[in-house]
Length: 440
Image (tube, rainbow, N blue to C red; front, side, top):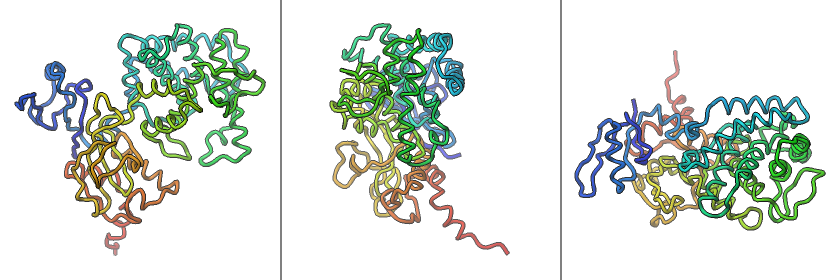
């Protein structure tokens, strides 16, 4: 069984994990030796030493191939039944023209504990939402995630002193966010799930989802006006561009709730797999949003979102231009968009001299990959390989991605050699097949 060593925050350690590198105290004396299996007592002692933020942990390839950091585990304290009921709610919405009061009331009751959890004194979802990325893009999955991101952004805005929400604010935002795309239940599935660019006619139909959605919610008496405004206006931007539901009054000023959901909606679209693009890192999504700050988007709430998500989840894997593979080793507390990165592999011999080098993401020494050459990122080597395969299928230039038109080898650090070769085996499968002797 192949193993891989990753950096894990002390606060995220779990009993049973194996120490991958001896942990030293501030005087250089061993605290825990390599190979030790962690116990609750070990973790408590590490937590007591506030100067130790990260510990190297050894995990098996099988665990890494599924994702060292699993997005599914990032949403804690939420009963699975709530998510399942939301799926049934959206499925039923395909066959009705308006929302029933009872269904809205039940949905609000289900969501209320989530609001309480996110706005508790220790907002665990806010912390763990930093790992959220790359989920399935079914309408109810997207709506569920946009609701969590929106609520976490509102919570972050409260923590930062940007906005002080009332209970009604929280409830209005939650219901509006979870229902923001309810109108997509009226879009034909062949258009909604089309694997490619929409035609002008299909795009015009897709834009109608805000009108369909508003028609479904406008006469629901137990749904608050701000929630309805989110459904109607979540594609309208600060500068007046974008679009709203037909037949609704123009907004003199876009409400804060709508601004938050607009940002959360776009963020989630960027970090999710779509038929026409590969899921991006949270870092890239935030960068795109900041490009529209002040013009299309409210910068205050982008700042709040950036407080709620991690641009680079610890331990994630990166692909730079020219086929250079790296891993996020450490994230400084005060500069989470400037992680410490280590080169772990390359598809060309030209860059083998970089293997093992660590550097600051935003300030690399001469000759090391720069911020603007980062292409893809994922939670695991397998995830990064899948994204690379997806990018190639969408027509990305092989030389830009891999540093060569046809890679003949993958050079990697010894601890990553096996796992990277397994993950990127699709690049070499045809070559290996050609080299096998023909059967007589």
